[in-house]
Every structure is written in structure tokens, then in C-alpha cells.
Image (cartoon, helix red, strand yellow):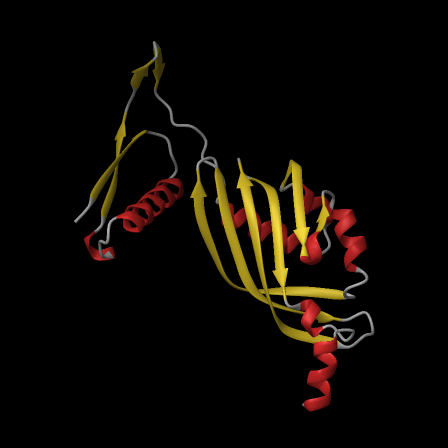
Length: 196
């Protein structure tokens, strides 16, 4: 069974250490077919060390949880608090929505969305993370509910958002959902209404 030791300088918060142990344990289990109960990961703290002629005695500041960054952004967008949502965005942020619609500014997205719905809310079912060097990919999945432009309500429409988080900020968002298939203007929606 795998045993992994992480050596850190003292000073990291307990929550940071727990996240690190959890992520490393998952990485080990993605390569070695070990059961959860047989996977041990622990942290050993050191007082100081010397590297490249420099002396170190304090750990660095940890990055925010990528999933929490995504959740905070989505909650701010749902509340239409664009100023708060903007604080989570990297300078080169890019959003790609259904139909290949690409935006770089939140105001562009809001203007485009007016033609698709009056209001939309997301119910999250799960978040998944993967790690790619200095970039964390977060998938968020769940259901959409809201109001179409004609005033009728919709609910339980599937969506998946994929985010790339770099240094605690969102660099990219890709969105997939079934809104187009359920829209009152959709031929599929018309057929399902006729036969329901």
C-alpha cells in the first residue's frame, strides 16, 4: 500500500495541509490501484532549510481552493453582482458559450443572454477538479431553471461548465447546456409539446 510523505516548512494553515494531503492522496490513487483505506499520506514539518544559497524558514501563502473560486463566481453572476464576479477573473479571461459564442467581458455575456432568457439560476449537483501544472480545471454540473423571454418558466435543464483556474483566478469558462433543445422556439420543444 502506498505511503507518501510531504515535507513542508512550518506555517501552513491546517485547512491548507488537509487540502494538500487530500489532493496528493487522490493523485496517488489515480496511478496506483490502492484502496482508500490502504493509502497513507502525511506531512512532516521542518523548521528551516537552505537552497540555492538562500535560507527559508516560513511557508508560502496557499492558493484558494479552485472549486471555491468557481462557486463564488457563479453565485455572484447569479445575483448579477458583476463587480464581485469580476474580482475572480484573470486579465485574459475568456468565456465560450453554446453556439461558439465567445466573450471577454461579463457585460457582453449579459447582453447576449437577454435574447435567451429573462432569468436563469443554477442548481449544482457536483464539482470535479483535475490538476494540470499551475492550472486547475474545475467541472461544475447541475440543472438550470428560470424564465424564457416569453415569460414561461423552465426547470431541470442540464448544464456543464468547465473552468480553468490559474493563481486563484478564472482564466477560461466553457459552457454546455440543453437550453437550445428546450427553448420555446426550438423545433424539438414544439414536437414534445404536441405529443405530450
